[in-house]
Image (tube, rainbow, N blue to C red):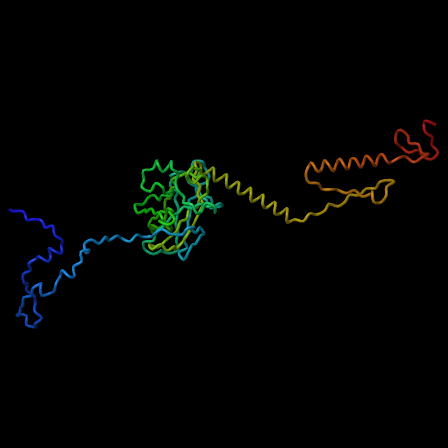
Length: 352
């Protein structure tokens, strides 16, 4: 059997060269027994209306939840109409914990590449195909415009496609990583799943792929994680944020920072109380001195701040007392015995 030659012409030329035989069609005549024949040429010229790009259209599925293009992302909490809330598991401050959360500081402490469960709660079901987005930003104002990236050392060791992203979401095959073309910020999304039967919350797993102390990365600069509930079109339905510290011993660091916070708060309270309380002068102590005027009878208590100043004023006071003692002389005609007692009238001294 001879092989048919392959045509190298376009589809338009091939269509025009087809020899179309007449075909039978149903006549509009009401009589069903009447038939007519109509040729394709009678229907018009198909070549004039043919579009060569008909079979070359690239159809791409719409990308859900595009990343936000804000230069400075908002970190304030916004529960929204769905009362979007986050909750963390209570892990304590033991040295063996890999992740722990401080309610006092609103701060998550976790180890490198260890999963941290975060519970998501909503008051009512969000729209279908809603997503949860996690974004890392620097906390301080002077660094907030920079993109939070991993250090070069950990990037080179990671074979993953999105190895520059600090935050990873585990436990789902539908995770998507984004890099905003305008701000270059990184974010990661996962579809929102309603709570399972008998549960009130949905749990997601976050991992942070660099230590807070890594040189060339965060470099000890504090960061915050923004977790938002968004529609497929990118509309924010709720927002929560919390500070993150990635370290080797989360329990120890949490305990230390909480103690420092309590000390600073107690110190500020004492200082504020000291400033607000008016100083009450101590009552003056009085004693009577024989042979002194009325003004010298009063004894004043002076409050002095600082040891050096106290020693200086004490020397001055001792010098004045010495001068006063030298100026005091016994009255003439009345000898003073060695014992220091004054002789009564008519008595004679031992020298007499």
